[in-house]
Length: 172
Image 1 (tube, rainbow, N blue to C red):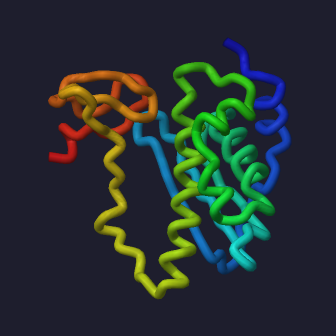
Image 2 (cartoon, rainbow, N blue to C red):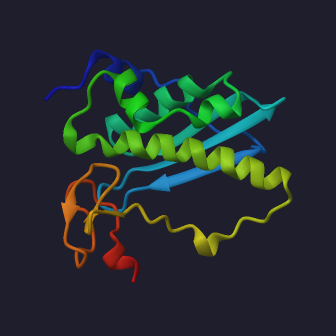
């Protein structure tokens, strides 16, 4: 499957790429299997994202997702930006190959983490890096599944074979 025109445009001409000096919120995510790493930084004024930048190391889809997510969030209120989901990101991009849908997850996650970091900072909470490992695996009807790609697997599995997220088996 080829990338859509939208993916190629955002890959070749990424919007909002760069660094914000003294950001008010930072979200960092990564996938240890494919190697994609995303960092989203935000500046906020009156509960609205007035500036947003990203720094991404990864494939073309990861760069395009970072660009699209930052475009979608710029100028939005924090509440509106929290409603940007992996499905909305994927739909905006047109179509991503199935093996790269996890990039849409990473982009939405990084944005949400930046917003949460912003709220934690204004509440005076220190960042607790000991709890940064995110458990992406859930249970439904007694079976383990990956909520990002909906793959069902055995609880002994260390990583989701489809998207590479660590499983509950690894977190034990």
